[in-house]
Image (cartoon, rainbow, N blue to C red; front, top):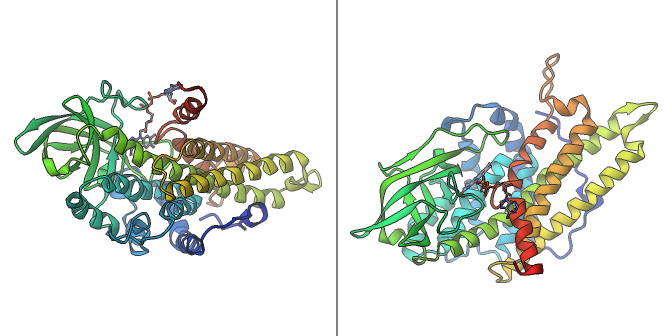
Length: 403
Ligand SMILES: Cc1cc2nc3c(=O)[nH]c(=O)nc-3n(C[C@H](O)[C@H](O)[C@H](O)COP(=O)(O)OP(=O)(O)OC[C@H]3O[C@@H](n4cnc5c(N)ncnc54)[C@H](O)[C@@H]3O)c2cc1C
């Protein structure tokens, strides 16, 4: 484990007006991160991507800490916070500071899948929300297909529900689905009679096959895989909301997801920033430290500013959502693209400022570990998933230009 370094956030950022309960959530997750998550990250990320490598104990600990209940009302069995999205945003920021794999596992479980279920009937909610919140069941959200990622219009989505007695027979193929190798159920975007619809599918169904996990450039502890439906029966009650509401439900879930993913970018950026600050103060050359060189002072002053701006955007989008705005745009798109972009930007500079130590994960000579290259690899995925950053810019531009 790389030794923890001093956090710099209090020198470069001041929160204004966040409820005190949010600070409690932050401290709880930070303590979990420092004590339980950080010591496991290296081992977790070095394991080959197999179903058995899912960090189940950490997943269960997050359930014990009540983290999966944060997004929900008391009636739904949740925490009933006044600002649930803000709480979730802070959780994502704090988890990603230690591990973006664990952050995105959390995101899929209760931010994305949980939000889909909030659009569903009370009956469906009663079946799936309690085990989701208690961590007894693992959820995933399956939107992407081999030939439909950014474009999920009805003509692109090839997963089809054909009407049969008391439900639908589902046929199709989903790709890159986080948690799929270990999930109990999936929220699946499909077409039913030509219109986009969302259904909940039991993955233990015999007509469902989940492929072995993908091998990815980073985030190895979070597993993605294909899911194939070969005439899987979906009962009528497992339709979310109504036929034809699939895109609205998907965008509703992705709205929360994008704020959360933006916040994960902020967390990763802050972590790479803190490690870099520490290194710059320690590393000496030409009679002074890197921290005394104006080039790096300016670079990291810029990064501090960008991180503060991204954090504000995430909190603002979250607060607008908590105030009742279903799609708080353009802040959501801005938060997602900007938060994830700065994570990649800070990580790239962090590798540079660490020199050779930024490029190695472990020194052969003494076995010491370095995590900067991991942040560099992990920060790339969030620029792509939950709506690539080009799609986010398109959404912002549409508000400006109308098309
Ligand atoms: C680690 C990881 C986890 C994922 N988890 C999930 C999951 O849990 N569930 C799920 O459903 N999906 C998941 N995905 C899929 C992800 O959402 C898609 O990869 C993403 O939406 C992009 O789709 P695509 O890969 O098909 O790329 P494409 O849609 O083929 O896009 C290729 C490139 O074209 C760009 N592009 C698209 N439209 C425009 C435009 N109008 N202007 C300019 N450029 C454009 C894109 O930004 C991208 O850079 C995951 C992906 C990754 C990498």
